[in-house]
Length: 206
Image (cartoon, rainbow, N blue to C red; front, side, top):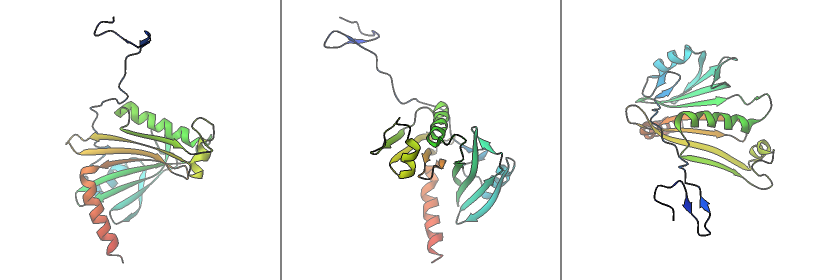
């Protein structure tokens, strides 16, 4: 008989069962924004902050400002296409980073996995991690990118975190059908305000 605290338990057939490990890591790393832009910062403050890192405001409409990046701008080692910042009356609410999909080896799913791995290294395992493929595609068949383009695959993950001030923050990563990898940082405590104001602004255009 194995004593309590042993490294493994005995199975019914007498063999050993490896000890269970927790799949979800825990982290105390707060998420207070990105690139020095912090939750609740004004649009003017965020614009000045991103300008120091070669992001130029291109368009602004109904609380969303899109920043274009220089051709050489990278984030986490991958080239950035653009960044979108969403603002409500409380300030910065969401930052979405869209990466260039001109990956040299055309391995877009590999790019997604690299970025997801970097996020997991900082924030622990994601709370939601979806990777599904539909026939005729399967994971590991070498045709994952084709599956994405055909709409026969779903890859996305989400981390549920806290900011230093205690706000609930979500980080989401996904790869779109056109192979765009997008990482979004959201202060969930302000998203309701943003959505209401955004919907009202759009309705006023009708």
